[in-house]
Image 1 (cartoon, rainbow, N blue to C red):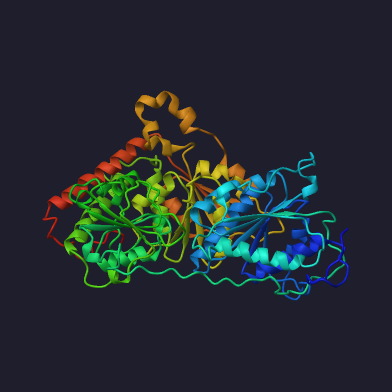
Image 2 (tube, helix red, strand yellow; image 1 turned 135 degrees about the vertical axis):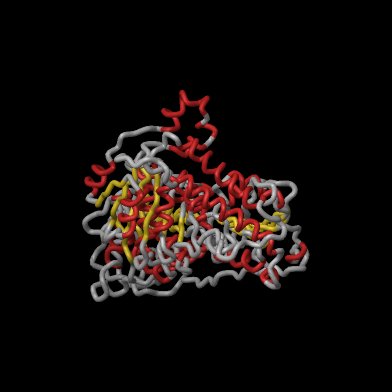
Length: 621
């Protein structure tokens, strides 16, 4: 045991019998002082000092010890699930307009490595996570000590700040130094100085004893605490060097809204009269300027072929037609990237990068009304054609057999059931792409997706975090069967943890149908496709849910799905939708052809340059 220090971190004071516990309590105090409200804990022995401190801080008002701040604690067994739960909580806070860092605590060893998938997603999505990983003290590293590996730097370039924190010893000024470090950590996670939020890693060494002694919590002192207001972002001014006026952009113009674009993209498109090509998770999908079938319309020479300028907000990740548009040499590309040092430009074709939309671009009358009207007219026709292709043929003879649902048809039902006050978390692969084609919202729900790296891991846990963070809103998550199985452990709720109100909609086509829509699904590759891409399985989803104590219902037709969506109930429930993937590639081709032909017919029915859209024909009504 080393020399004592004052309980509040000064040079004098009572002897401290458990420096690890003292440091953990100071750390929890400082997290709360910097706005951290949620901490996710995956239990372990080396992280016990933090576990004890968090357990006391999570007690109800009136039961917490003096000096313990109020914290919401969430306990999960699996570190990977814990990290994605924290990610979902962070996404929920950002959606409410009050970004907050969320902490996740693990013990040492492989527990730390299990955070990596969520860390990478948070890195690329700009989500503020605090990774608090317990470690052996320095004298045990490299000695073959149990559960000891090289943890500092394990997340590489994916962190905004990483610190290897020595084991506390009770030295004078130790608490002050820790408060200062936490100030830096939360500031870096929120991107207050950089505009680039993301993960921060504090590797916290602890020596035994790992349990608290009889000492009280330290006074919540401010020594070492640093207040760091967010750095303001200077708005570009139209007409300044490198910043064109709106009228200087070569026309016609469209706005592309990728993931996380926000409401600004819709506001700009509607003010300027520009078509808005918005992904579902852009935060701007809705209103009369947003054609749902934009990815098909981009192939039309009178629509996509005429585009000469694009204003890009957010990060587009869904469709190859949009990627091709953003890489065209004959298109002037303005990227609006307010955060960080980089910007989305996979086609390496940007002409300028602005920190925001110039205020003057919102002023003045809309540009050529016929340009937007043509997109509206084509999209209305394309949408009707897609619906007709998905619906049952009314001319078919009545039979006892119900045709199996297709993925796009099931997703259309989910979109129609998702109201403006709801939250829809959508998984990668086909669900988000089907949603992109069939969702026609006048006013959309809040749509969230893990598009930072667009993986299938952690989606149920992410959605659970969103639901815990937005308890007053109806939250559902839409995933495919492989995404569901990949994170089925996210259904596990410990009996000491509160229920999560979350409806999970699983499109079960017994495999990976996304690959059927890519080049791997071409008929000439059929011999190898099913085993290495289709990955068929025969998992009993109902039995899995029963094992986790989760309500389950299986539906196979549209009416039953609508009933299940309308009444999710309390707690977590799973709606399994059996869909057919045997014809998935051909179905995609039929839908695209129907939309393309209908749009071409609508455009050919009048002068593209002059004919206004018919009253009431709104693409997303």
